Length: 463
View 1: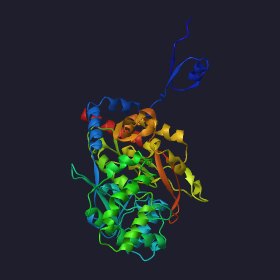
View 2: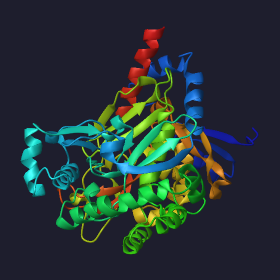
View 3: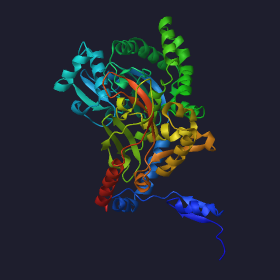
View 4: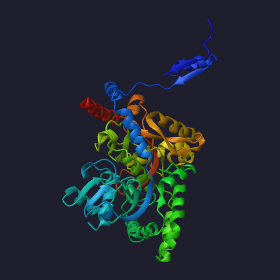
């Protein structure tokens, strides 16, 4: 009996390893059974005559968007927030279920707006619920990092797709450590926020209105070639933004000391560009919403208690499960017991194909979130298995300039069991603590079968 020229092994590596030990070439196929209980729904959605075309439309619509920074203005003006109204990250949630960092951010926001003198007094205000309302950022075409708290007086970036006029919004980035978005509310946090409202916001508004609009999508394209992945590493993107805006800031006529302070703040805050990357990704993904039959995920968001996704073919419905604890590196003496479960709208970057999906283009990120360089390369390759295509604008040099994996497909996640990889910061679970680390996390697996079941239900309704 002749020895086969090669062997194809599907699934477990036990047989493959034995064959390879005999010097026989082995092709390994990483096959896994679908998620438990999804077989019937997978078969139904796979047979949907709309699915293929709908997913092609959704991916194309997303890739056609170009995000441009066109303005900076208070949230009261651009998203219509009124006194007592608060936006937050993630799917809808009430105060009684809010996590520590979200509560801390809301307490800081209440003090910033003058609803209370002491942030600690805001607890009673939110418990009563009589004069305050909470709403997800996503419901106002906005995104917020970590706690994502936005109040009427906070200034926001305004991004626009010139082809459609569609807009998205995000607050300005405070930096790392003890900041509102990580749930801190100490006096220095409020002092910084007031300076951002009194000085930084108006100065940025003058700069943006007084210069050519900033091509945020173009900066994202360049920064991925320069070692950023646009979620937890934004150093190159921040410096390119500073390059584009600093001449107009200097020529704005503002007090020179204010200009110098603003330039110093932005230049010393490597994460400043994150708050532009996020609304750019949302702007692209919003173009793919509402396409009947599409199985593409258009939002992933966390409020520190729940992790939720939205899917193109199911409208604005949220599919939720418990937010997970990240695995990563901790600051100082902090450890896993100090960390809150995952929080923030910043997973919109992974939803669009960057962040954790583009770890191969930013191997230095492992020094911030943990893992190794081979892990980063393997992660990007693995994400191709659950996405509908690639983004030719956002390419990975080390992978022969292959486009980043783009368009998370609910059916592929359920069929393979591979979950989206997210890079994230970690907030302290106690309100007021701030940042305790950074790491890697995935969504709770059960939310994808929930979305698949709804897609299958809609398919049957049309049949």
